[in-house]
Length: 296
Image (cartoon, rainbow, N blue to C red; front, side):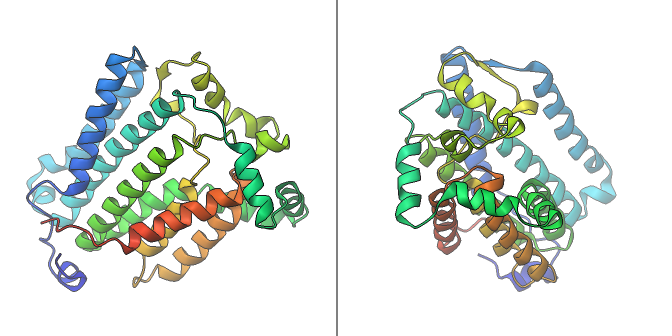
């Protein structure tokens, strides 16, 4: 793999051949397509059109030679297209796997939390007693995952850190797929539902979970998909990977603080068991330690 220093000083460092993350994304989309067609699922056509328009809009500047010849701009726009396609494919895969509906494991996960000394309802009550400013800060940190991914993509791409951006996209793609696949045999409704402490908006954000499991939801609408994975926590994995992507850059400390706050917020704000968070962190650390294949 080219050194980071080379990518910082050489704007022309984007791979000419398909990177592994493109292969992962195309394989994911192919599996989704075959599964959807073979099992009688429906795709919301309007959402597909919006996705196609977004992809076209991202590629439109490349019609101009000045942008097409700028490796930083061209590479960033192509990476954004890749991320959009991957996110769509991963979201569909998570829904398809949830619909398999194996037995729930909430009792097991809650039991593991108890063995670790965590009283989840007590943690929720303790967070509710925090000053309003602290609660808003935790809520914003928890909801910062997708905006952070966009920020990392733009920052690394437009600053010429091409190798670092490819590294992040591949690690994020692999971690996301591992989270989705590992969650399939360990489905959980989540701590809000298990302990009966979720409010109306909390439970509404998970409304698709039971509808998928009982077969009443058979349409995949990209614009209305919910985050339904409990174990391992994708938010926890994202926090580790985002902080790792910004290491050694001027954004490393703000990124570290924000992602530590995301981790702290994940149990209550996301309705996750503590073991969900620990599993997500462990998975991300394993992916960070993984020696990546050459991408160019």
